[in-house]
Length: 123
Ligand SMILES: [Zn+2]
Image (cartoon, rainbow, N blue to C red; front, side, top):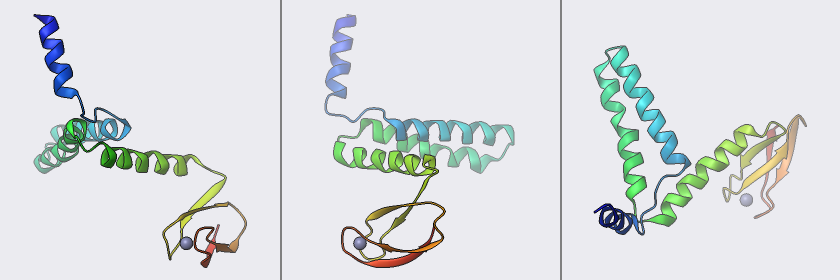
């Protein structure tokens, strides 16, 4: 009986994305919004909390693995940028390539390594 249930679950989840960091963040965000909404008796906040929860569920059962991996990768690189205290990140105004430059060098001219475009930023 349990074996059949396990087999059915495996078949259901086969080819689906599953849980990742972004889904976990969405889940926690939804739960926090829901609790805050209930404690402050702000009804609309409780309804708003369904959005990240539904997104987390949708992502977990999604079959579009590439798109979900890309979304998760975006979150991970954002977290990495926020943790990086020694560098600043800019995107090239021409090709949107991410460019990393050391912090504390004042206003500098940055040359995009991909397209060669030059732009001035304060680091
Ligand atoms: Zn560029």
